[in-house]
Length: 296
Image 1 (cartoon, helix red, strand yellow):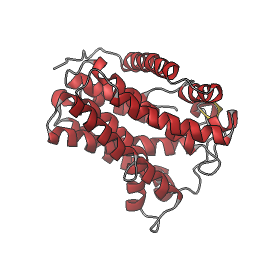
Image 2: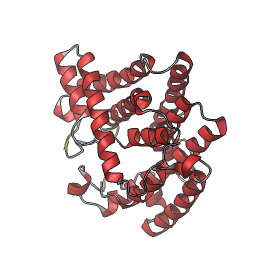
Image 3: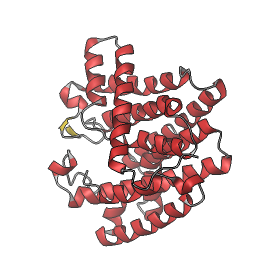
């Protein structure tokens, strides 16, 4: 089992992951070239400020199970491709109508709406191609990863969460909001946490603990993001603030003070899950305070 030094700096780890993922994404983009405008739009959507946080989770779990990073590269990049596709589509005028992403014009604003739609489509399909072609993984492992990614990103995962956000099917209450946010944000984070455990052949119970942790951590991440929409600034966030006023989220339902109290409860539950994993979750323990204290 990988022993992570207590002195190891989380920011340094995040930086290493960011550099590693961006190098692999650059190769993928080069290999995927076809139409000059689509090529430029894909590069634009994938670069320029992303922290590669979801791949970080994949590599952090890889360290817990002694999975070489080379074996986790394809699924880490696939998850980032899925995440970036979702951002490109979320920003469209027909969805969130956001003109700014990561401090620069969103993809549809920089190019046009049809190009942004096709950019998202291409990033999503490229994600599954990357895993399917991974030479480091066996056929069964590749199949298991692709199945998990489709489940967490599709009709009962992230896409469903976006749909429930746009078109609620029941009156707004805490249970409905938590379920929507678990799907919209938590599912892809859960995928990030499960991926390396699947590669390692971890037990079903351990994979399930990581899935549960991912869903909890997704709620922690989303509520923190919603609080920043109220308490942050456009400069620190890299996008307009106060865009979520009137939206179905926990902060609007409960208020700032009660939402922060609920965050404390979620953090406690997440830490309890990590206690049941090898190395008590390793670097995953350090990332919770980082998310709570982030500025963007």
